[in-house]
Structure formats: structure tokens, C-alpha cells
Image 1 (cartoon, rainbow, N blue to C red):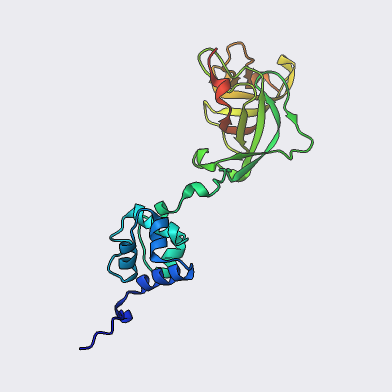
Image 2: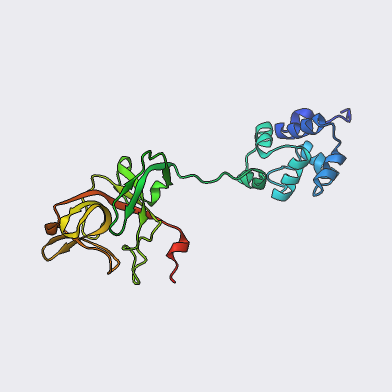
Length: 251
């Protein structure tokens, strides 16, 4: 048999040929690739290009990452060119190079105005263009998303020494058309001549000895009794309260 000194190219795997063609396309020598990779030597680069050393099975993550850097390849480009796959692929991509995208909740709820936790009427914005973004995962199961509206809270009758409650400045997300249950916080339109009051309030839906009662968590807050009021209409049941950690701190 006469040995020609030439490599049998038919025996070289396609992925090895892809490595060689990439290096040659960059007009780099094996020594230059090894020097730029730092973790590899020229012999290892040669063995890779002859299919004697497998890049994903034999090199390890650190050396493979160094090789890709020297060949100016992203992980995706390497996979496409060689047909090789590796579970470590995502880890090899430098995530820090990509700009992190801020998380923006998808659910938008109209902010209609303000509601008093005391004895001031609901103030509706003339043009409720403002919207509150909420992650729907925080809402109770069964909430009708198409019936939600938001109001900003004024007054302190829904806070007390024992209960942090709903502080002034908080946003309440309420659902229209929902039947309140005992203990629910509700937005209610009240017309009560005995209290000389007509307007919307934020109260706790409760039972009393003489019928339905709207209570405050603040013991100094007003109480409205159904039998004493000419009109009491539930505008919505509160499903979520949004506030900042600062206002939740005890004094």
C-alpha cells in the first residue's frame, strides 16, 4: 500500500469539518485559535478538526466556551453549523450581554377616581385615562377580569392599631356585579339622611342585630346600618389591595 500522506477526508465527521471550515473562513491558524481560546493548545484544536476529540463530550463547558469565543461563534451558530446539541447550551450563552427586559403586568384596570374610607363621596375622574397594571395571578380565583375597576383610597377609617387594613393612598381593585359575603370589603353608594351623608364609601360588609351593617376597621370610623339608610347600593367587592411597604410600617 502506498501512503500518500494526505488525510482521508471521508472519515472526518461533519462537525469536525465545520470547525475547520469556520477557522479557515476566519483566516486563522490552529495556533491562533489555541492562543485566543487560552484554555486549549494547538494539538487539541488539531484533534478537534480531525474528529479525534469531541467538542461537546470531551472538552467540558469551559473549554467549549473558550473555543466558541475564538471561532467567533454564538452557541446557536455552533449548533446550526455542526448539528451538535448539548443541555449546557443556554448556560454557555453569556446572559449578561443581553439587556434584561422589565417585567410589565399584562392586565390593565381603569383607575376611575378616589373613594373615601370615611365620610367623603367618591370622586370620579372626568376622563379615567389612567390605568393600573396588575398581575392576574394575584387576583382570587373566579374573579371576572372584565368587571374590574380601581379606586384610590382617602381617609383612615379602614386602619386601626390592631389591623394594618387599607391605608390612605392605597389602590383597591374591585369587581362589579359580585354578591358580597360577610367580611368582604365593599365599595358602596350610601344615602343616609340620619347621618346626613350621601356618597360612596369603602367599608366591611357585616351583619348586625337589626340587619346589614357597613363597618369601619377604625373604631372611630362611621357605621352605616341598612335600616337607617334610604339607599345602599354595592358598587363592587374589593378583590385586591395595592400599597407600598412604607405605609404598612408600624409607627
